[in-house]
Length: 133
Image (spheres, rainbow, N blue to C red):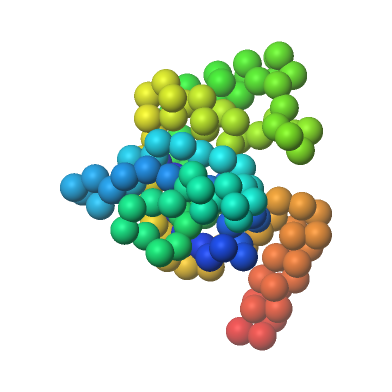
């Protein structure tokens, strides 16, 4: 299960993005996943029916343990994403093809920690909230 957030065109290139179809239980049956698509690719291939926004990964996951075996294979075979990293998105793509993945839209604020700069910014934001009540 992937936590998802509605994102606009300006944000879509910053996050893993999914497409799929809504099921009767209000969960998204994910049919494709991509890491940080450009706006053009997102508009072409990652529109979800009946959604005005794109659905991007929120950073909350309930993962099948098979995912860790997939990550292990990616590491052993040194299979990397276009950014040179061994990524969770690549493993999620494989798992989705093997058994399917579902998603649900989350509410709340997304705090980025994907880069050292993001990590510092997020920590500063959280510390400021803590200090200022």
